Amino acid sequence: MNLKFAADVPLAKAFANGYYDRMVLLIQTMFGQILKSNENLAFAVLTGCLRVAKESIFTGLNNLKVLSMQDIQFSEYFGFTDLEVRQLLEAYDLSDAYENIRDWYDGYQFGSTQIYCPWDVLNYCDLLLADRDAAPQDFWSNTSSNDVIRHLIENAGNGTTKQEIERLVAGKEVVKKIRKDLTYRDLYNSVENIWSVLFLTGYLTLQGRPDGDWYRLVIPNMEIRKIFTEQIMDYFCETVKRDGRSLKQFCDALKHADAGRVQEQLNRYLKKAVGIRDTFVRKPLKENYYHGILMGLLAYKDDWAVMSNRESGDGYSDILVEMEEDETGIVIEVKYAEHGDLKSTCQEALAQIEKNGYADQLLEDDMRKVLKYGVACYKKRCMVMLASESEPSMYR
Image (cartoon, rainbow, N blue to C red; front, side, top):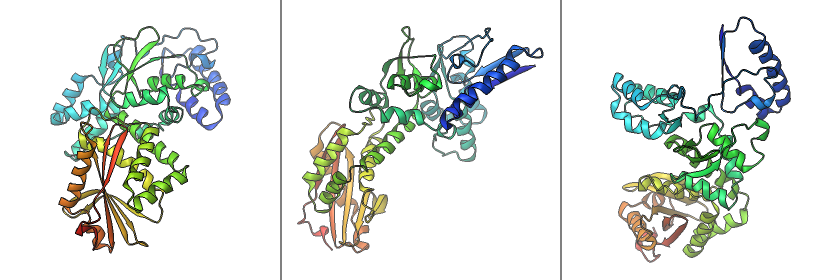
């Protein structure tokens, strides 16, 4: 008889739900019967993210062979190789999706082999067979709670860890000492342990060869990067809500056409937040982060109707705000200043508002006054410019 166990899954669930010690005792008894004194067992495989030997569940069992992600042996069998992916795509006439699949689902290093996540590749191919224009999706989140990323962000503070997260999201590496013998009791005892968990669970991967216990870690692909950025944005939106006074000041300045105050407050938020420096994506995607920051701030006002990417005039405006009681509307166009020229980028944003008639929808909705803001961002700096109120199109 041959057996395969996902040894750490029951322990992970038990740790998350408060019955960890009882689960250790149960597995210890079960494994002792199945793996040590079972005359009918010829071969068994235990799989999992964390090594579980230190959990004392293998009492009396001393003939285990451990193969980790760094071992050369069998490394090509932990997922799909590049050749296998190409062959799969060719078989289903999906070869034109190769670059998307590589960017989104490749990047893992097992031993010296580059590996694709097989779950993601198969799911996306299945999607493409039904819709050839389907965009890549995040399939990973359906199999994980992503709590470990959230713990890292929550413990980042404003020091080194925060800068390291920003480096990772920007496509750069961080060097960390990895503990391969972590137990679930140790997971969140320190920020350094969290780095090890991120590596062992596949949120980060090794680049090059390790130097003893020191590893150069990177985010493997676009799918995992998307999970990081979403967790960063969710955490930002939750934390800013705790400071109602600052949010009120920001929204009041926006409402009363105080562009200088809006700029001051927005710069303060950008410095505090974990920055997402999209150094390796197209300009429109770089603007998404700043767009998300503004949407998180505007969510404070329950009595404002805030619309994102709403069709208006001859295009889609970034953000439209309607204040029915005051009959005042706001148009915000956000742009990324590719070379750091904030002023000209602000002017470009305001020109786009005018050219495309983004205020038309607000006027149609009986907003008597419309404020138009151009927002230019570069890394952790921004400039906010308000269109002159003397312009005829400002008023109905």
